[in-house]
Length: 126
Image (tube, rainbow, N blue to C red; front, side, top):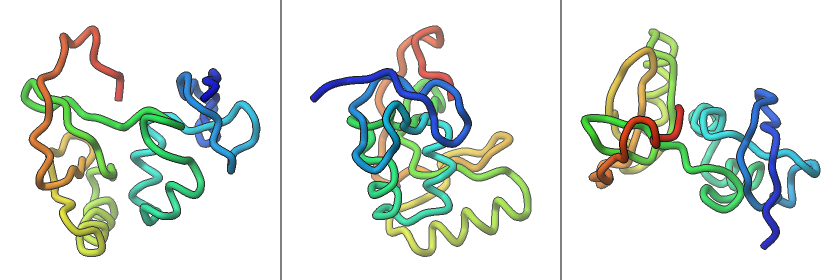
């Protein structure tokens, strides 16, 4: 598997060094932040079809919460519209639950116990 420095096809920022997904223009992928936002608007199958597999074609979105890192299933703005969208996502996605809210609503799988987070300097920016 050949790794490439990719540009996010959504926001235009850096998307990390990952394998090129066959369904993206050469040099483009998706960053973790945009992947988490796109996940809220797509089915898991659509996400895989468009962007590939987390950890292979793009960085797995994670959030730091109480000293642990959790895999983000989807993220929504903390607003009335965002809350409605988050509730709709949880209704159609078995196991999805609210992990935490800040200026956004973060959803993780109910079985995700997180892993100890490295120091804040080493934590992925999300």
